[in-house]
Length: 181
Image (cartoon, rainbow, N blue to C red; front, top):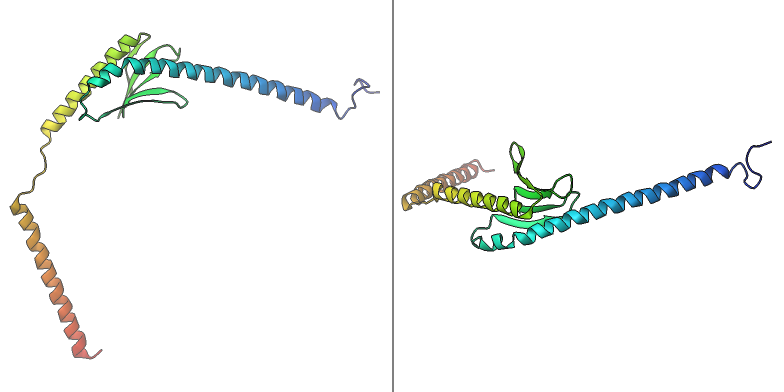
């Protein structure tokens, strides 16, 4: 005789256990997802606090300086972007702010702190350095200018090319007409 209870046939015993295990696994996965979503929401909330603390700094940036584009991206790792290469992300403990700059040699951590005012100071220093770099780049790069002599030097080769091309076409037309094709 079978060791299974009389109330359950042999072919139904395994699916019930698997079904219960799947149900339990789904509940556990939903709980983990809920925790991850709560952690991400907490990260975004902390970044929004920092973003509000940066409002006075960004209000001081002259309107003609368009190199800073601040905003919070909500991906797997929420980030507060300062410009194209620098952002603030939360550390592993989800309470530490980390100011990071992407360079051609990898990411460089410029500041880490639990304190919002410390990170605001680090962002302020970063923005000041970037604005000075911009000024130096604008001063050292001369604007391209074309003199009338340079413009004329482009005109005559064009005229010569057009004349030679027209004469060649005329010569080919005479040759074809003379041969009688």
